[in-house]
Image (tube, rainbow, N blue to C red; front, side, top):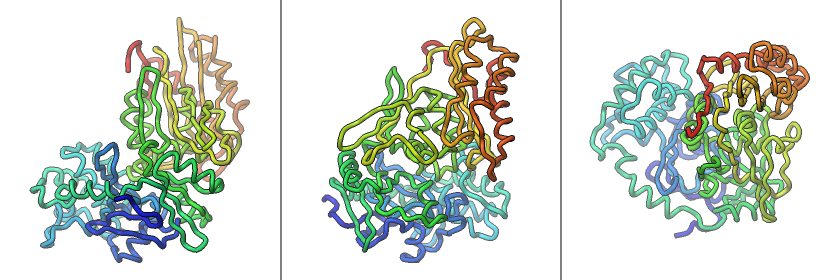
Length: 491
């Protein structure tokens, strides 16, 4: 039956929960620990970085129940409508027998102080559910978002390898055993109209579809729109910023679609990095390694490409390569839709070309012409799960040794993601050789005046940007790495 107005309903382990008196900033972590006393889920960093708070959240995607690891510390209760939250307490059998993932952590000494262990267990459980034969790269990717100061990770990796081989009957595993039942229960909880929950002066809104979102935003033009909360979560936990009222959009199915045709890809604003990975890495192979370095698995499961664009951060990882690829963004409101080049969407620091009542609906990414060169490079202090100091993206076409077209964009070099138009001009019409590149490097100082902050100095950013252009040139001469040349007819 339809979800009645006024409460958020979800399943927690094996129990259905309905909450009608919650603030829009209440996190799943606080609810689990303070209200439900499920203290296996830990608070470490409260910013989605350490993974101690990892739980699984199951949701319906294209008619299929999908479970993903998420950071409970930055996941708001309002985003859980019609989901299944699974904590570490749910894994063991009723007689106390440990789940194979838990038992492997014991057998291979994957825990020392134990504080981070439940988070590791839940990340490995998510891997165990979705991949019965993971290689080491799969395991390391699943654990990118989990930090441990004690074990050095090797025992945990060995535990993951052993757990993958341990497959007791379906009756043992709680998710496998109850998948059909949980699917039916979540379908029954899926709202057919907007859910609004009020607590004193606070208000959270969960639209059922795009029309409901447009109406809600028209009625609340100052509302904070939250998709994955990988950034907004920190506004609350670290900056104590008020975000009321809040509109949660992660349950809107029409915003979570990817359409592919000969012209390119249309990506809904609610598509997460995890959901987009296959399509983007297939069409633009250079984006695969880049997406793998955006946060950890939990962040990629929650964070959305549309949210990264709408947020307008100058160090967002997705805008520079999308700008270089010629992407456009479609904005929607009750007045209709309008589409503009992505690079024109970013006006100034903290300011985007989005009118009151408008929201980012989708992003269109055209295919690269045959023969174009394309690469994207992320520079950060830590290779994995770190915010970029700068990120450069490059696309060139070269015919008969001469540069015909050039598109270059950087994040972290200006107040917005920004094209290097003077560098492009210095390349176009010139031979694609080292002399041209060294001449063009000087034009970076006309295009950018980067700031110094704790991630990098202005001088470092400028030098790194120049060096990335040289790297792009050197790799186009035979060092493949992240560079891909798009052959005629290749998809």
